Amino acid sequence: MPWSHIVRRIGPGRLLGLLVALVLIVGLGWAGIFWSTGGAPVSPKAPPVLVHVQDGTSLAGVAEHLQRLGIIRSALYLRLYADQTHVAQDIQAGVYLLSGRRSAAEILHQLVSGQVATRRLTIPEGYTVSDIAFLLERRGIARTQAFVAAATSFANPFIPRASHVRYRLEGYAFPSTYEIPYGTSATGVADILFAQWEREFTPAMRKAAAKQHLDVNAVMTLASLVEREAKLERERPVIAAVFLNRLRRGMPMQSDPTVAYALRRPLQQVSLKDESFPSPYNTYYVKGLPPGPICNPGMPSIEAVLHPAKVGYLYFYGLPNGGHIFSYTYAQQLAAEKAHP
Picture (cartoon, one colour):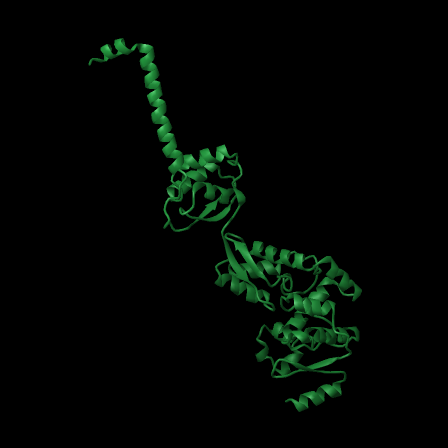
């Protein structure tokens, strides 16, 4: 039937209404398909991809990039959904591990809530800055030299600027397990470790240090000596007491681990002749404490210094099983050495 006959039979106004209804039906159908599929996961087997969202990047730019990477089905859907939920301006910069296994809504939530990709880092008690630096490079988090430089120049308020410490972060990189965000600089890692130490070293602990007439750096330095000397948990407060007793009598600490630290050698490679090595860290060569810690002590060693055993020992001698013989006098110390050569 000719089109003109159809128009005359139905009428122009009614025909227009039918056409509009048809367009609406088709449009709504396509919209329904778009909203039901546009935000669906791309594939249950889609591999995760690291995506770097730069500071100041628009949602539109991020959405287009995610679509190109095959992480979302539709950039338009993500933009419309973000507008609808009023979070279009809330995406956060960072490196994200995103996967097409998740829906667009889940991916948007990850970007808005700042759930950035991280790498786990565990720092054992007693690690030095050098140990941590090598660990960071092995984990692919930061270059060794970059972290050493950051630790050397670290703005530590507890160490005087004129102090001749090797690393201003030494002793304050708290041993713990961390989730380090991808892209964190070596300086950023140092800040994270120090911030954790600040949380752990509570105001109550500072009061305990003041009661013993010790400043924070003295506590951390003593704790680092305890960390290196103690092998048995029960002996930490006793070893701390020995060092505190010697300190208050003006006696040298005479701690072998300080010689190893001064020489940058393993303890097993330190000999008697090394006790005369000139270094502010060598507690056979200088009286009192080193200028700063010789490692990063854990909380048990710190607590041992703040709450030492109430004993009068001035000496201890190490045994093969990791324990020690404690003595009041040098004669007793010599006898212990003779009895356990």
